[in-house]
Length: 77
Image 1: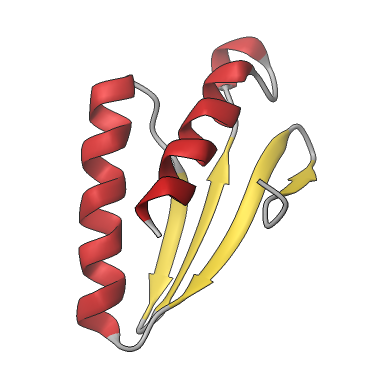
Image 2 (image 1 turned 30 degrees about the vertical axis):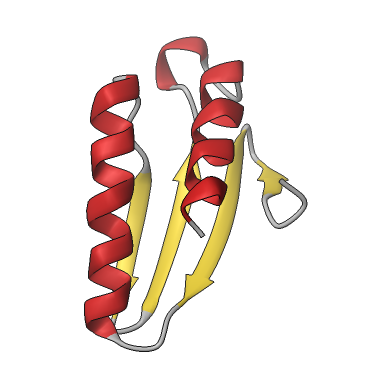
């Protein structure tokens, strides 16, 4: 998880892919993980770049749910 940055009560990471299709495929896989975990990211996508922020709004900040989802996302790469 060294590529994630802890900031303002959350974890953030930027990803770059070969093209939009590869970025969208990654987002689709993350969406399936998020649904299974019932924990959804804040994210954005511009062409081949994806930015993800994980925080637990109910808890008011960073929790083990965020760390677990970050680790699961890392495992996709």
